[in-house]
Image (cartoon, rainbow, N blue to C red; front, top):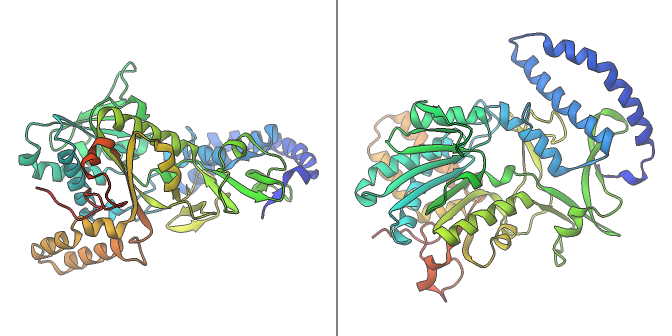
Length: 443
């Protein structure tokens, strides 16, 4: 339920009472926190309480916070944030991504990377940059393709660059991609970890995109933008108002959504005047990141491929949580569940500016079929004689392209250097010969 926090006067008195409760609970919290236990459920409750207590203290002191600030604390708080401390991927986590489902997905994206490198003029250097690489499964499949296409890549100077803020996930990535043969970098270096991949390529880890070296790069962002903090806005009789997170006056240890009674800075600058929706979600951080990618692609060459569930400026309320592969109340147990919102590709397109070309979004089903997933499946089936493995290949294929599963839910969006399509100007939108957005042609 959304409430007008400007009209809720009893919140202040409840906050005063809450301050006393927080002070009384501080001693209990300290004693409990110092008590060592190997029980995982207790550790989970401790993290949950830590984030919630922090958020309640902040709201008590300064008032309701934006949904973006709530997401940022719940997901990336340096002490107890979801992405900082959890292994959220795979069957035992909270969600499964396409690279975890089938090797075919990563292999086809590897072919896409090589195809775009070829179409852009076969630069003598080639940086593969992945944002939010998960467990490293996608990069691993792509690097296997690179090894198989050594004759095509020739003497190209290839390096791998991963942008990852989670210490736990970076460990998984290091094990997957290098056999954990990495070393910690000095504080004066931009990368915080480096090593050599199992295929013999140099690999580096960074916390920020800005730290990745300049040069011809293919950027991959698979289920990355959906986890960036969003601002939520509601159309009212008085105009656009921002949806905020506040303390529930009926249950002071819980949170609720409220609607700001006056404009906020975000509602004043982030909403487009021509937007006709009643509810809008905007991800300014995503806009900044895609601008950085666009600037690099315009100046250094290369391309970016964004893969995520999203829409082209049509959806409204998509903010949701996942825990144990089930939908989860976004305001319950912050730090213990994944928080996500559909990517607005129309917003990303606007933010790229005029110095690059954008293609898409197209559905995952269309992209993978254009990339030859049907042919690749048949090759794998011909070489696989184990009945259970064959059944798994078919099941994975169906999961990826079935319209009722991931086939229509996920979208592919690309940012290209303007020179990439110069010879094809005048063609209809999304018909330019770019792998995945048209049928693959590697000559």
